[in-house]
Image (cartoon, rainbow, N blue to C red; front, side, top):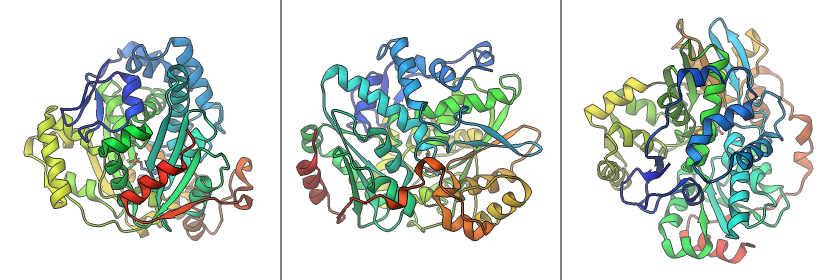
Length: 462
Ligand SMILES: *Cc1c(COP(=O)(O)O)cnc(C)c1O
């Protein structure tokens, strides 16, 4: 299988090169040249298999000849061994036809671990074979960075530099990034918001001299391998609710559009997903775009669901690429308009395509808090604020089709909001109870590309 860029002019790559590259050299995002369909009988036969075996069968067609079956099974086994739940992604029932998919049993307590743990093992296997060294640089609103650091800490041939917005991540998120002691881990606190960090990372990838000098690799949700890893739990959840014989809907708390785009791929592979609902917090650019056709940035408003405080939703470009019939030039033009003018208008045809696939809703801060309170009272489930945004929006779309809301983080990752809503401070799981006793290590840097590049050049170990 080959991978092509959403902007049409970057080299076509195989799976391994796509994974190691991250962002395409024309500024676009890589996508498979076709989505391999799964037969209904193949989907049905996933029922009852372990999460790892489902993951192997679902992802195998996308990786081509990069790894043998035995190697790939081994990689998957190592990726999910550190999860704190045998089902990996257990499904809980919230109401008559409403289910919660708990994606927070990984080592950093957010769904990002599903992709990042896998990517760490994939990188390790690929780099060991080639002897290549890479510098991973990523931007985070909190959870990606901690998941990346956890996945790559101490691995050979890799440095990991994570840019996070100074003062805008939770204490748990920050400590997960600043307390690992391995020399190949570098937490950078940048003066700015998440979009600042993300723009800096994009600019580094477009600085080809720097990119080639340090062997830049990206593990942000623009990395195709991350999207691919997330496709698996859409299948595991749907199959356990009766797919392919019964359709299922999903509601996804959304920021950078990576997680929900994985659902879009699952649907394209043949999983009967009726509705894919985008749930946003007060940073509702995606909800507005779907409602009006105008994708217009509006400044980030910090919220109690900080991992969704995003205006430039990178992976939306992948959906636009399909909505524009895979016309890379058209997508490149929209992205130019976004960069120069802060927004663009989605064409009528593309908007209709998007509306056939996605629905959307938003939750205000008050609605999010009320949902945490009410859900804790009515069920045994304590939601994190991101998951609560999802549950609030999902409740407006309940129907005869089972609805699965993705619970994207553990409540203990955002204890202040959860305590305020429920009166109870959610404790960290046993295995990370000493997080607040470990020493921190972090470098504060200005919003200045040259300064950050210089820091990376001087501090990498690989
Ligand atoms: C990253 C994140 C999201 C948003 O996911 P996207 O793939 O960026 O849409 C939602 N909730 C939590 C807890 C996250 O860490």
